[in-house]
Length: 548
Image 1 (cartoon, one colour):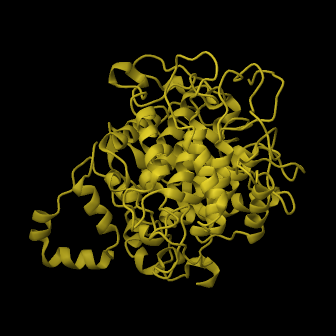
Image 2 (tube, helix red, strand yellow):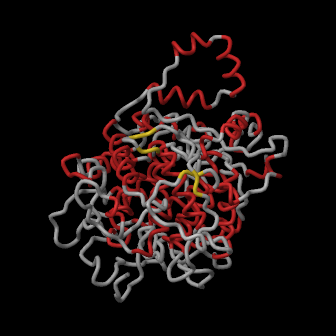
Image 3 (cartoon, helix red, strand yellow):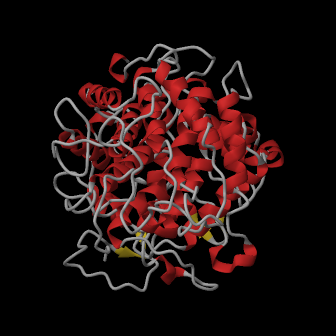
């Protein structure tokens, strides 16, 4: 249970304050990404004519990332927007590998079977024609330009994710990519049998020693969402078939998404509507939205849209968000997660109200200092924020300034906004540093590092005209790599290999080792997870999905 403490307004971690909370370029993986965009009928025709040549020329190793295909349910002649979502589909033909006894009164929708969903040959044969069905999707429209969610601009539908291990083109290195893969292995090995990530019970899955670093149990929704986002951010989906260290990442994702959907209530909220639950809900929604956007699977469309609808209802009229539904007060941290969910949903073709963006932008402007462009937490000029008796000894950072930058970029696409360079200057004066020796003003803040990476990459990262990025990005990028990669646990650390310690982090007490590992993986995926908003070095016209 969460310990009792007196609270001061907090600069939160994304899971903090929630109630529920190898190497280098691989040609084969790249080739699979290219094959993704080839219609299946063409591939089938070519295979019958030149099967010998194909077998000789195209070889896919067992550990390569699978070609990800959308799940399209019959009947294929029914227009996509008329296909109704059947929640039970996600639980059909599912192989459940767990010793847990499932109470049918709690989970009547689970059908225990020895047949895996991906063995449904009829379904997957039909899915081969999905590219033709989706050819008119706004996600595939070359004129649609956006930066958040699944991609856009020259990055294409997936924002470079399927070429994730080729991140060196945008500032990543072989060791940052290896760090991400190691983190994903750790997360996969510490997923609970039910599909969730347990903030305070993940050590039950340890095999070689015990991994310390429990978070609060009420943050399970949030850390599950972050973990799924880390897998999705690399380009894996629930249809990935390849195995890594004997674990199917497709199965990991499928089980995690299934668990989230099972914990969505009738109002569309992920997890209980109790306490400060909006962090959990926004992160859970973001995971479902990205899963839908990457596959256009009807399994995820309805729960994703319902999650977005709930975020919309929870927004304060003409303002932003806080912990609950329209509580009257607002904070920048929850608002940041809500904006990310909205923008990803827009990219995925879901319905998003413009008023949501308008209110968020108004709030960010309201709490931005006009002289230095520092952004406050729940008011302009908010000072250092912390939880009494928990993290007073940690240094304050411009995390919320980074959140504000992200919101402005994703909503306005105006690179001339002085608040962007103003924020970048503040962040450049407080670069990430790994120092566990300090007893006061401890500098490690994974949440700040994540949002700083996201904001500065968008504002000053590599573009078509500037492959290296600007001075703000280059400085931050070098600091991030030097802070995160050497501090990740290695093989000699046993079961902890691939993870990061949470007790050295400003907000790690909330989400624990699962949070620390997931959010750091997301930070190191910055090179390919979202394309730069100002690709080509100039402002682009933002076109609404509705205009297509």
